[in-house]
Structures are given as C-alpha cells and as structure tokens.
Length: 245
Image 1 (cartoon, helix red, strand yellow):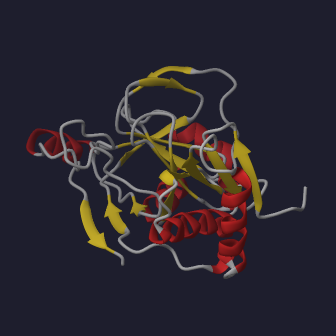
Image 2 (cartoon, rainbow, N blue to C red):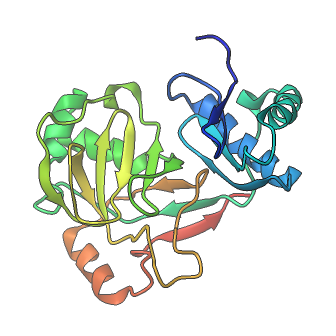
C-alpha cells in the first residue's frame, strides 16, 4: 500500500496514524514527533496518545466524536510538515547502562555473534559502543524496544524459546535490543546482563524510559555488576544519565 501516512479507525476507541509499512528510523521519528505535536495541540477529544514502532495512536471516543471530524484535523496536521524529517521531541534522556556481555550471566552472546557473522569480541565492541533509541514500549510494563543496530544484526529470533531469562537481561534480534522487565521465556538471544529496572512500581514515574530516549551499554565485569547490585537501590543499575533536549 502507498497511502502513507495512513489514517485508520481502531473500532470506536480511536485513530491510528501510520508512517510506514515496516520499521525505519525516519518512520519511527515521524511517529514520535507526530505524537508530540498532538499533545501540544491538546485536542479535548483526545484522552490519551501512544506510539508503536511506526504509528501514533490517539484515544478518542468515536461514538461521541465523528471519525470524519478527527480525520480532517489529522490530515491538516500531517500536511503541515515533513514528519519523516521532523525533530525528535524535547525532554529526551541519554542513559549509559553498565552491562556484562557473555559469561554465564549472558550465555548467548557467542551464538548471536555467529548469527551476525562476527566474532564475540567484535560483537561486544559493537554492542557496547552502539547508541540506540527507544523505538517503542511494549510487551511488559516499561519494556523498551531499542534500535536500530547495523544491518548484520538483522538476525532472526530463535525457533525454540529459552525457558527463562532474568529481569535486566539485554537481548537481541531483528536489529533491535530489548531490556527485559521481568523474568520471562523468549526467542530473543541473551547477550548482556544489567541491573537496570525498566519498571518501578512505587515510583512517581514507574516507566524509567520513554520513547525517544537514547541508550548506550558500556561493558563491565561480572564483579562490577555484583557491586552495583549490592549498592544500588534506585533501580538505575549504576546508569549515568544526561538530558538531550
């Protein structure tokens, strides 16, 4: 389909604006920037907004507000600028999250490196120096999908599930990284381990990360991670934080 951006209704619960048929950096940028613009517009009919990898969702009671009326507003907003080149929203953060790669703490690093066509040392160098963006939050509370990595990291998920990977695990597949919120089974490969908590139930801001935030994962030793776990009670896992905008 070529009708991009595309506006569709989602039952009677709202409207979805889609900027691409598959994940691209410009389309994700557009979704984030468009959501920020809708928030600034502060339309009273919109009770909530969210983004996926390439779309912005507006929660609107379409039994009370005609979809045609909202669609016309959205079309005007879409036409106001080139969303694929729009600046990212303000208030973003840059997190540097200490990470152990490989060892018994992250036992699938070598397997992932082989799938990416590189050796484990190169994999650690690339992953620990990569700067990735929170593309969307999903699957579990506060759990980020991060990307994109270089093309050779477009590795498939495993065909079989790992039975359980711990909270704070850094996993990789399809050019993306994820930090796990909870212990869970997964088809993604466990390449790193952090002490970072993406969901903090008693905090005023329970989701530590927001779409548009950026992250790096500098390498540390298992002993350093153990010390962080012993000393850190904030959930930050020893992370350093900078404001981007």
